[in-house]
Image (cartoon, rainbow, N blue to C red; front, side):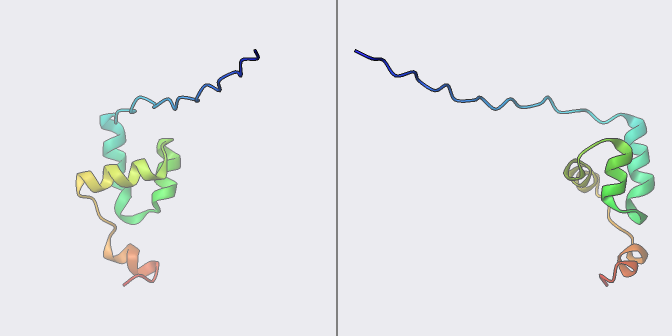
Length: 73
């Protein structure tokens, strides 16, 4: 009899979380209020979602002036 080869499920490997250095946190605090999150993410070499999440956890918000510039207020 012929045995069918079982397909192995590709296991998704989770990356270890990249910790935030104090210098990165300081830069995030300095830049977040008045700069695009995507630009900050590129500068920090991190994903945009990671920067958003970290900023949120730190209680950082975009400035009213920056939001007005974008037409959001």
